[in-house]
Image (cartoon, rainbow, N blue to C red):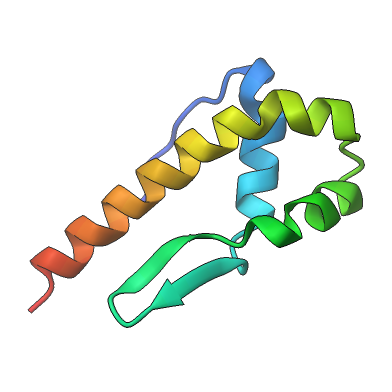
Length: 80
């Protein structure tokens, strides 16, 4: 089932960066443990996000990361 959702324009840069960071998860034996922060600046640069803007959206990126980790943990708990 595919869900649609709306993203506020002010949050679009954080969402775009989070989406592009999808291959940059650090993982342990139990699954993902967080984004690889060392690659955030490079990925942001590829998207044209400047350092000042990155500093502004970083807290939003962390909220998205935390929610994604919560969802992944729930999925692991509910898998057979």
